[in-house]
Image (cartoon, rainbow, N blue to C red; front, side, top):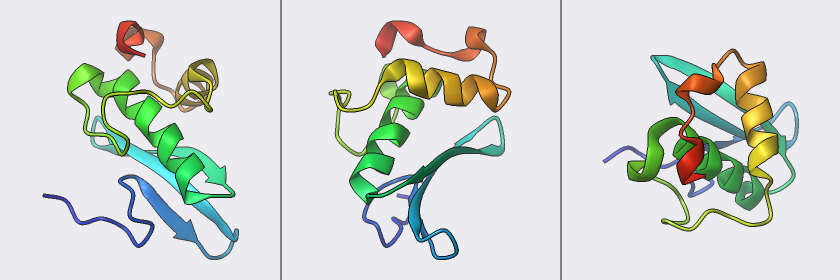
Length: 95
């Protein structure tokens, strides 16, 4: 089982220079930045949506099978596509 960061959430770490929580996901042997957030919980929700989009229903997430309603799936799709992930790689049906 992977080690958790001090945030207690998968894919979330404190970025001391920015003074915010940083969300990231690993996909196709590269780390994809999902941005900086004021709370670890918000960063974890963004991670969960990105993980479901990238890995489908079997993705390991922080909040289980339910996608957070407080974060827009469309916003996370935009983040992933701006990082060079083609739309054809995304599991939009599970999001």
